[in-house]
Length: 178
Image (cartoon, rainbow, N blue to C red; front, side, top):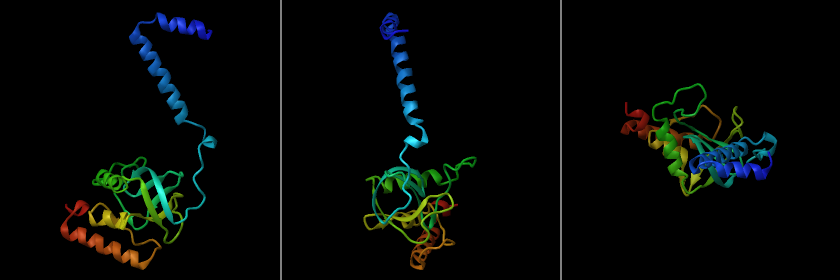
């Protein structure tokens, strides 16, 4: 069918049907863009340096997607699950995710590296700062994460995280409110 005959056929449709056809075409185009082949999507960086980065999206309470395609997992704070495949959303998970969204709302964060560069899921490991506040410590203090001290990172940070978790426990905040 030529473009001219296609336009003629569309003009003969009632206005509502033309709008539906247009909507279907737009959705199909957007889905086509969303499903770009992997080789056309920018590859995430092989390494990550300390510095300031733009947050593209909050994946969950303890994982961020940066503008450069890097996935960053917080060091030392483990929030309840919300997006783990074949796993239910855990209590306080949505609140932890929203807390993280609110915390990084300006979009600019500073990363501090400490310990191994990546985890077993190929996410970069880092402490996340906005101004002079550290996201992990604030999540722990709010009772929206457990201190994850079993991993290799600085003893000074582990002590900060244990203290923040203890504060939330004693105040019965978030996950400690039960």
